[in-house]
Length: 282
Image (cartoon, rainbow, N blue to C red; front, side, top):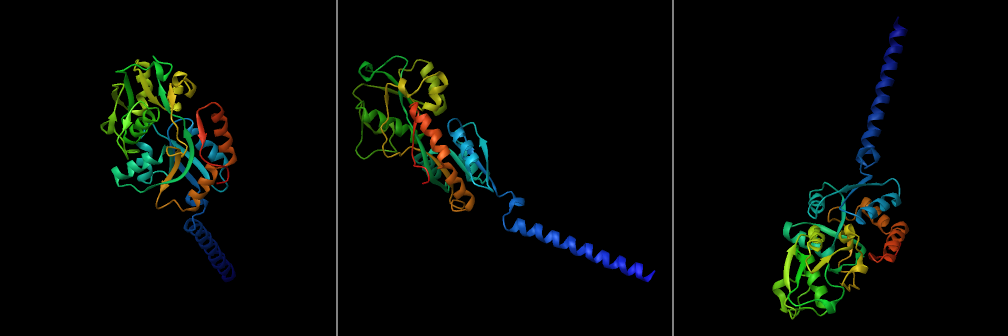
């Protein structure tokens, strides 16, 4: 009887010790940011094609043990709010001037990491086929957000249709127009509704290829296009100050500049939609 009880006590001690070791290993894995903590899944907010396509391709290209979960949003506010509130780890839906404006308005800490592609923007018209045909007094639909309004006005100036005040660039508004020889009337429209302005017959409409594509148009159909050799308005991978140097975000940036992403963008470049803003391996 004594031997049997002694064996039971020894067995119980061994089981307890093994359980304690198992718990210790589990805690260590969580403390070191192992797979059990979920830190290897990187959440990236994005909005629409081809931005969402790029996120998916980057997710397929990212090195183990990391993976990418795309969080698709419906407007131009959610992706920055989600990143600022630490609901996602990064976003891919905007250019740097737009991000900087958000930081100013929300006292944000978002950081532009890597320009990926420059969307070829321009002006479209259901009425005119060339600049020479544009009549005086035409209505011009431009984005209602500050940075894209400035971009739209700068494109008009590039094509000698208006003149902006000296020194005014990325913060330009219609109030900064010094010369308007065609007597244009400007209408501010939400970026996502500019295609509807075209369909409603507005004579001249600023737009992105992503949105105008929904009605079967491409930059080849534009009356005139932007010239942006510096990629100032390139769609950019964005993170926060507190996570920009983390291993996860570094791995994400490498995936976004992979050969696979570059090849996808190069195919779209041939269609005239955009231009890659990086070289593979940057």
